Figure 1 (tube, helix red, strand yellow):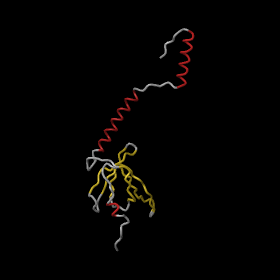
Figure 2 (figure 1 turned 30 degrees about the vertical axis):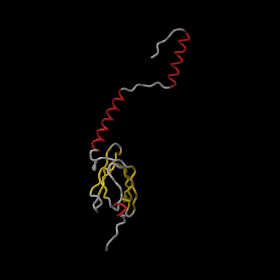
Figure 3 (figure 1 turned 90 degrees about the horizontal axis):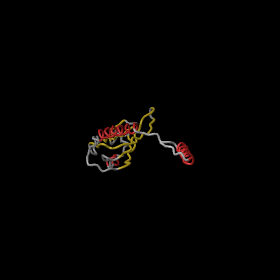
Figure 4 (figure 1 turned 180 degrees about the vertical axis):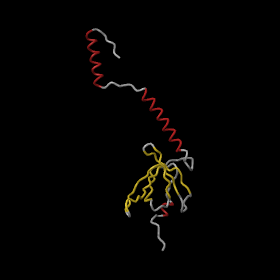
Length: 150
């Protein structure tokens, strides 16, 4: 007996999914026997492999809680409910695997910057403290004895 796939093959074949774009993939996840829920995985499309043939795949990467997560999805999988293209970007490479290292480097650079900022922070007086300091200065000027203020 031949079973027809529930996937719309033509729609998936014509899906304009390119590296550099942001895609939201709605995946069916089985919770109990026969019961499914949809889970979205949104991220940057790193690669698309094997064109439009039956074994075609695409790789999506996102950063979740500071950890990079990559998933490779089969294009014609019946476990994928739908694929939405959120944003398109023009890139000059077919495979964006270098993004893995680039993101880590940028994160490290930001950590270095944040460490520098933390050590150089100054306490900013609150509004009420500023009012009290201004009041003291006015009183000292009125009394005729100038006081040095910090």
